[in-house]
Picture 1 (tube, helix red, strand yellow):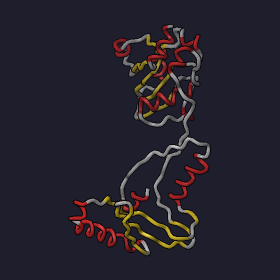
Picture 2 (cartoon, helix red, strand yellow):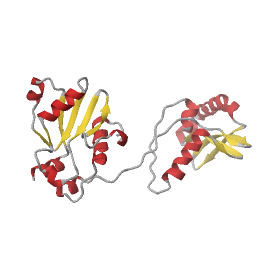
Picture 3 (cartoon, one colour):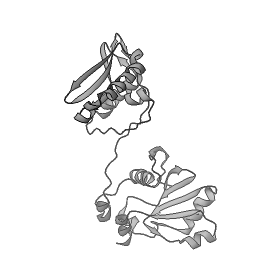
Length: 239
């Protein structure tokens, strides 16, 4: 975030925290760095870190010019531009005295939490069957590369969400006996129903089995595509 502010870049990052203080401590630090925070003392910002070796020392003039360029560009932002050599690295930092509040770096971030693990081998045996919303959000992300929104999931209608003009559906219930019935499949009647209710959209339907085929769907002008659930779940339907 600091580097983006310095050079106007668009770097992105993922920060992972396993402990329970992820939101109250870890994410809160990011929020404060973005918005600014109460602080009194000297704030240091790294402007350059360059590994030194014999070849670079032979052409040290180039390094001097790089440092001078940084000083000219950022001197007005800091009280002092400090240059040090530590552990074989040239480090240039900008130092600024702060009396009350540190300036925020701006930017934005999304805070997410992981749901319960979805273990396909346990779905196969029926040992654990994830709730509809958990499986739906995972499949939605897999299909669209976008985060699934649990608030938009409707288990009763088998609806997962919508992205880029396509509606995504999941024919699934966390009941092993039900998954072995013909109801756990994309049927022609289900394809007709969703196409009639949402005629302008394309539809992608995840299901353990398929009672249609592309020729049948195309004949009726149904913009519905079948996507088999992960193979382990598909074998549950066949068991």
